[in-house]
Image 1 (cartoon, rainbow, N blue to C red):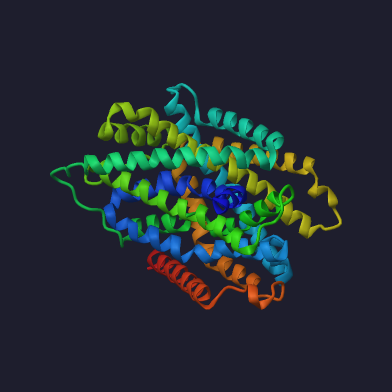
Image 2 (cartoon, rainbow, N blue to C red):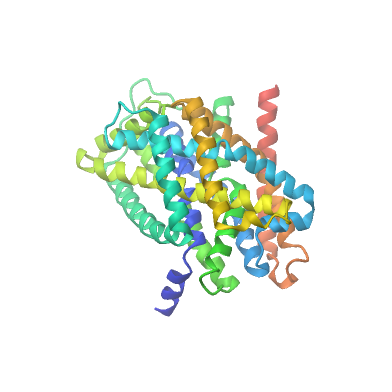
Length: 416
């Protein structure tokens, strides 16, 4: 019982990670994976979660031992590391949030049957609501609310997955032909899936920033307890990814139905096809679960990108103490709102281009950021006893090698 109480008390950064991860990579990409390619997609989903695990674990390890963020560690390795990460953050600032809010706006329009509203208008409303919650609720509100949201989401998706399995897969249409995986279209999809499964590797620094924020109001846990809390969140993200894949596989694979790139149409397809298979009574369960998934992801990603941006600027201009103030955080949140609203308005309701660009960038830089994180946790910033063990190092090298080879294979296909 005391151990359970300790785990619940320490829940925070790992839970936020889970909430942030179970967004586009799960609802959109995992569902599409099962719908288009069937059960085989469980292999890349599991591989991505296993091979990318060390990159995120290092964020928790480094921050717990040093009381510094991963981004501070990049600066300690050299300014080149920090500038490289700053460029990645700049690119994702214009893609990740816009993609997340576009999907969420589509789900909102579908859930409340407000087809007369535009994606941009609904996205702006969501931007403003979340901005207010982040600025006035701060980290504490984020953590408390997401403990409830993730719990409800996990139960709802578990129930949905069980119902889908009990009902069995849909019958294949007469002219159904499985989509090939190892052609240009299939490889591009795999890049998107692996690039954002469980989430982008650059998000490893987000966990370290959330950890620092949590310890301002609570005693810092031991490294063992911090890793335990993170592992709970990470395991939840992996399980939910498989849930979404199974739902897509059992409800859509073999029907020749293509999921739309239009946010509103996509939301309508997902919710209606799920409920047609399970029963109309489950409509509200599916719709609310999907919307809660994306809303919580938008909130955590928005919070993290504001914190990361300020941390980078603060390290590049240490003489400017203003970037560490509460006012700076509020302004950063609002600036992200304005920038990404402009991006959404420009791309209209086509989320496919946004998701493709965001996942492509994440995929290409993943092995580089993974290597940067390894350099951090095997540096003089930590005593050797806190360095990752041989097995974790081997897993790290395997992840870097796998992602690098896959990226090279992609470029080979594009060029030749």
